[in-house]
Image (tube, rainbow, N blue to C red; front, side, top):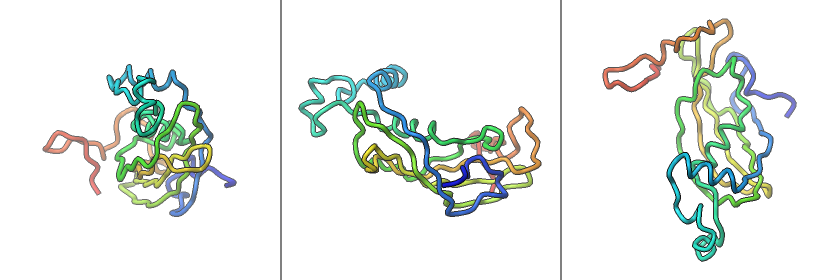
Length: 171
C-alpha cells in the first residue's frame, strides 16, 4: 500500500481501498491493566494454573482488549476523524496469547455523506496475529470531517440528542 487512506479527506476516500496497521505485542501487563480497568478478572485471563487446564491451555487476552487494540492501531487522522460511531458484527475467531503480535488489516467498505460537514466511513477490518490468523473481525463506522468543514470544539450537529436521549446521527 502506497498511501494511508485513513488520513485522507472524506472526498478522497474510495470504497475498497485497503489499509494495514503496525504491529503490537500483547504483554502480560496489558492483560492485567485491562482486567484492573474493567473488573474482568475471569481466570481465563488472570489465573495461569486455571487457564492451563482450559481449552486454550494458557491465559488469553480479553476479547474487548483485542477490539481496543485494533481501534488504537488504526492510523486515524485527528484532523479528519470526529468520532467513532458504531461497532458492528464483531466476531471473535481465535484467542490471543501473551507474546502474540497483532495488527489490523482492513478496507473502506462504505462511504455515506451526512451533510456538508461530515460523512460516515465504514471500515471492515480483521485483527490478525503474527501468523496471519484472524483473531477478531468487525466493521466500524467513523464520523469523518469533510474538507472545508469547521474544526470547532463543539460536537457537530449530527450528534444532537434525540427524544430517546441517546446520541444519534441522522441519515
